[in-house]
Every structure is written in C-alpha cells, then in structure tokens.
Image 1 (cartoon, rainbow, N blue to C red):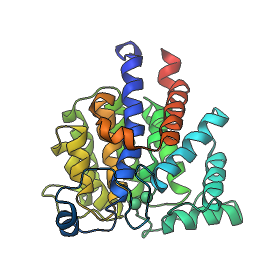
Image 2: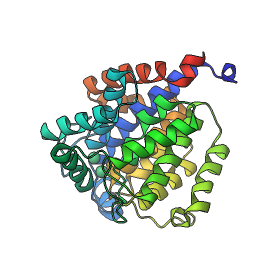
Image 3: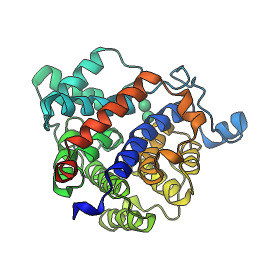
Image 4: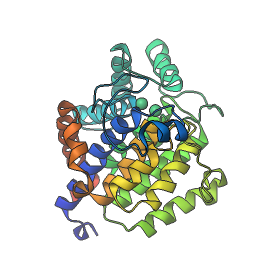
Length: 301
Ligand code: MN
Ligand code: MN
C-alpha cells in the first residue's frame, strides 16, 4: 500500500507543514490578543511578517508554539524512538531558558514534571486550552501514516500538560488531518475527518462560524477549520485565521501547518519565507527529514 506514496512529495508537504507552522506563529504573534476591529483599523487586512505585538518580537521570530513543537521533534530525533521523558526534559530546559512566552497550563505541567517527575497531569475539565494541539506536528510526522501510533503519541504528549478529553479529541483529529494532507488527500477527505470530530463532540461545530479565536481549543479549532476549508491558497487560509485576532499566533500556527501540508512548499509566499528566522527554518528542515526517516512510512519505502 505504501508504493502509492511519492517520497519527494511527502517530504515537500511535511516541510511545508513545519515551516508553515512557524510562519503562522511569527505572523499571528503580531496581532495576538487584538480584536478583529482593532486589527482592521490598524492594518486593514493584516498580512505581513513585521514582528512587534505584545511580545515585541523581531520580524520572523517564533514563540512557544514553534518552540514546544521543536522540543518534541528534538527529543524524538536524538533518542531515535518515542521518549516521553526526553520530551519533558526538553520542555523543562526550554522553560528554564526564559522563553518569550508560555501558556499557564503548559507552565503548570512542566513545573509538575520538574518538581515531581509527573509525566501525566491529572484529568482536568478546565485544561482545554490549545497548548497540546499546537505542538502536534512532529507527532504526526514521526507516526506517519500509522493512526494507532498517532493516537498513542498524541495523547501522551498532550497529557504532559493538558489532560482533557476535548483537547485530546482535537489533538487526534488534527494529527489525522495532517497524516491525510501530507499523504496527498483532497480537502473533501479532510472535511470528512473534521465532520467526524464534530459528530463525536458537537461543540466543535464551525458552521455557522462564531468568529471566536481564543486559546480555548474549541474556539481555536473552529477558527482553523473555518479558514482552512474556506481558503483557496496557503496565504488565504492563514491570513483569514490571523485576522480573527485573539490567540492569533496559535490559530495561525495550526491553520498554517494544515495548509502547508495541503498546498506544499509551492504555496508558501516567498515574502514570508524570507522574513523568517534562518536558524529556525534550518533546524525545521533538518528535524523534518529526520522525523520522516524514522517514521513507519519511510521504513516501508
Ligand atoms: Mn505563542
Ligand atoms: Mn498563542
């Protein structure tokens, strides 16, 4: 069954997903916590990587979304296996490095690991932020195309900080959509996957779109779905998502990882790629290839 896949196409889509997520993070961070009308009056349509924002970023600088995804990627690449403790160690080292930002639920989970070695936070109905979903991309790459492995790794990495059934469902659905998109599925097929999530958890229903883009994983995924399915290019999907404001770096990162996987490197505007932090892009290219090389799909080629 693996022969239907073209390794060059898959590598291109995987890179575009990871680079896309960093671009979405860097673009959206400028308008994080702004409202749609604040963005509209300041920028018209906001669509350039210029840095600034509440974090006072340099143009092309990424935030916790990309950094935590890289923590997972580095752990898997260096251990050459799924090693949850190595992921937690990297999160801890990252938190100690005084990152530019870190969500409250992530901080609480990482501190629990640092103090008590906790690898699974207790079930908490309030821990339904988007912090576990935003770092799903390396998990999708490393498990490609095995759905069972994907679900195991998705939930394990999520529970380091977020142990919540709604967050888990979002992480798994996002990972499955990434698998499909990287393997070349059409949007209609991706739409069926999103509809499946809505059938099991009606709270994710995104039609009609309510326009909320907060850090609550339900609002985040509604925004991602709305703009990913409505956009006709990588740029349209991402610009739509970040102009909703609120948790714009994270809705941008997630929408752009999906759109990158779907449209490939060809879809990523050069003007955005050129603005990105070179060190981050180089590391992303290296770890993407290594994650793919360690995936069940590559071993079958
Ligand atoms: Mn962030
Ligand atoms: Mn954010």
